[in-house]
Structures are given as structure tokens and as C-alpha cells.
Length: 137
Ligand code: HEC
Image (cartoon, rainbow, N blue to C red; front, top):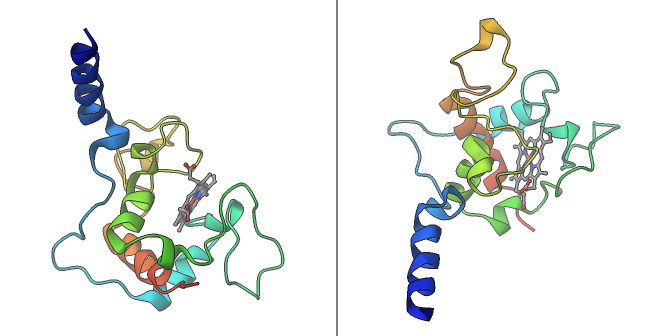
């Protein structure tokens, strides 16, 4: 019985999206531009990252405190781990409030003109990953 339970736990953890892959490789042929990535992270209408996160943006007067600071993200996570968090953080935490920036399906309450499109393009995501990877502690 104990063995069956152990097997069940292994199977569940293999099929559970939370455990599936904790990192995501870069799309072929794209390289990130960290300067553009910084501008995107600071863009409150496009990425709205700073609604929830703080970060090294001395020019910003108000930043969010609903999420961990972005400072040091490049020391805590590899580029592939950062990419996964941007593309679809629900794969790590089903209840997260962070938007799945690279996903276009399974989203709720999307205005008609934005349906079928991710919030950020693969190039935007590479640029942001390049910026975050430089944020070392
Ligand atoms: C609506 C709030 C919200 C927005 C907007 C948001 N995030 Fe997050 N983010 C979170 C939360 C909450 C977490 C903590 C992880 C979790 O929810 O499980 C997180 C986690 C992260 C992490 C991992 C932090 C760590 O070190 O553990 C990174 C990196 C990150 N977000 C980057 C971004 C970037 C870049 C953007 C904009 C493109 C963004 N986030 C937009 C809420 C948000």
C-alpha cells in the first residue's frame, strides 16, 4: 500500500503542471536587448510590472509591493527560469496573480481585439529576461 501511494505521488508530481518544467529555453534566433527590456519593465501601460514589483528604477516614485522585489532576480534565477516566470508563472504557482505574459490561450476576460495574442511578444520577453538577468545582488 505504501508503495502504491509513493507511486501515485511520483505520477502526480510528473503530470502536475507545477512540477512539469521549471525553466524554458529561448526561442531559436532571438537575443535579448537589456536596455529595451528595462524600458519595457518600466512601461506601466504595456507590461505594468511595477504595479506589483519594486526594482532599480530611481526615476519611479511609486512601485508596487504585491510581489518580491526584482532586485537580485538575476542572482536567484537562471535565464531559463526567468523566462518561464514571464511566459507563464501559473506553471509554478496556479494561484499566482502575476499575468502569464507569453500565453495566449486559457485566459479570462480578454477584450476582443486582444484575443489570441499574448500580452508580450517573444522578443519583448527575451529583452526583459536580458534586463532581469543583469540584476545581480
Ligand atoms: C499583478 C501583479 C504582478 C505583475 C503585474 C507582475 N508580477 Fe511578477 N510576480 C508577481 C508575484 C505575486 C510573484 C511571486 C511569485 C508567485 O506569485 O508565485 C512574482 C514573481 C516574479 C518573479 C520572480 C521573483 C523572485 O525572485 O522570486 C519575477 C522575476 C517577476 N515576477 C518579474 C515580473 C516582470 C518582469 C513583470 C512585468 C513584465 C511582472 N513580474 C509583472 C506579481 C506580478
